[in-house]
Figure 1 (cartoon, rainbow, N blue to C red):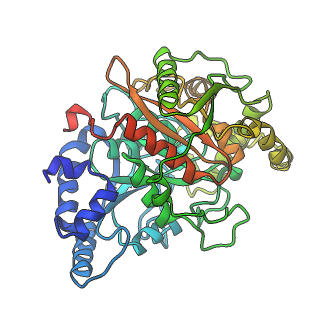
Figure 2: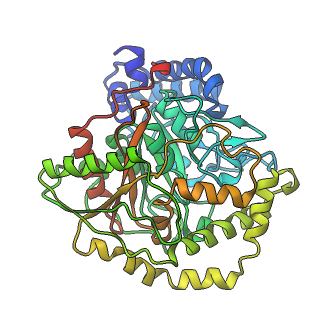
Length: 471
C-alpha cells in the first residue's frame, strides 16, 4: 500500500494491515508524524504531538503482535480532543487558564489504550469548546483542509482537520450542541453523536447539564463502528447509560438495512431566523432521491420543534459554560468573549435548569413523534457553508452566539433529547467544499443508523476523495 493510501485508509483497514503484518505500528506512526510535521504548520490541527511516546507505544504494540496478541485497535494511532484527559498532560480547553496536568486518562482514553491504540497527540478546540469555529488567542487558528481560508468548524475542529488531512485515522471529539457533527459536515467526514451515556464522560459527569457526549470523527462508517465497539460502556454507575446494543456496531454497519420509512425536513427550530444555503438544500434533495432509488419510502415531515426547544438548549449550554469557567484555576486569562459568555450563563438560575431537566422527557416525546411512524429523520447538517477564518474575530459574545445559531440550527436539539444523530457526507459544492446531511435516529438506535449511513457510503462513496493540498 502506498503511503498516501495508508494515511487515508482509516482505522478499521489499518487494524487489518497491522494484524496481517503488512505494515507495522511504528511505520504507521512514523508516516503520520511525518505528515504532521509537513502539514500541521499550515492547518494547526494539533495542540501537542506525543512523538516520542507514540513511537514507544508503537514498538510495544509491534512486540505484542509478534508475540501473538490480538487487540481490536492494536498499534493504530488515534488523536484526542483537548477537552478529554490524557494522563500527565494539561487538558487546556483551548486556553491557558488551566495549568494542572490530568492525573489519569479519561475513561474513553483508558479504553482505547486497553484496546491497543497509540495516542498520537491532542487536537485544538475553541476556548472552552464554545463555538463552531476553532480560533483562540492562546493556540491560534485551525484551518479547513479543503480550503485553508475557511474554518473546519468546532468545537472538535482540530480533530476534524487532522482526520480530513490524513494526519491521523480517527480522532476523539465531543458534541454538546453539534461539535462532532458540524466539523464533520464542513470537513467531509462521518460524525456520529451517540446516544447519551453510550461513551463514558468520566471523570466529567453530565457535561453541560446533559447536552454533551463523547464520540469520534472518522472518514468511514466502519471506522466509527469499530471505535464504538471498543469505547462504548461506562465504568461508573450512570443513570444515562443506555442498554448494550443487540449486535456489535461493526456488524450493524456491515448489514444492509431493509426497506425503511424515512422522513425529511428543512424546517428550522422555532425562534431561529436564518436562510438555508442553496447547496445545502440541494444536498438534502439529492440524498432524498438516492434513498428512494435504494428502495426506501421517503416523505417530507417536520418535527414539532415548538418555541421552547432552542431556549432550553441555549440555557443549558450557557449555564454549562459558566460552570466550566468557574472550575478554572486562572479564569482572568480567558478571552473577553469567553468571560462575557460565562458571566451571562451565570444569570440563568438553577431553577430554570431544573425545570428544563424535569421537562426533558415530555419535550423528547414531542420531538420524536416524527419517528413514531418513520425509522429516521433526515435534515441538513448545517445551514451555511464553512465560514471564513476570522469571520467573527473581535465580535462579542451575544453577536457571536446570534451568528453561529444561524449557521448550525439543526444540531443542538438532539443533544437536548440525548438521542443519536450523525453527519453523513453528501457530495461537494460548486467550490469543492464538502456537503452533508444529518440523520437522526430514535434513542439507542446507533446500529441501524450506522447501517443506513454505510448503505449511503456504498452508493455514493466519499472517503476516496481527499483535499488536494494534502494528497
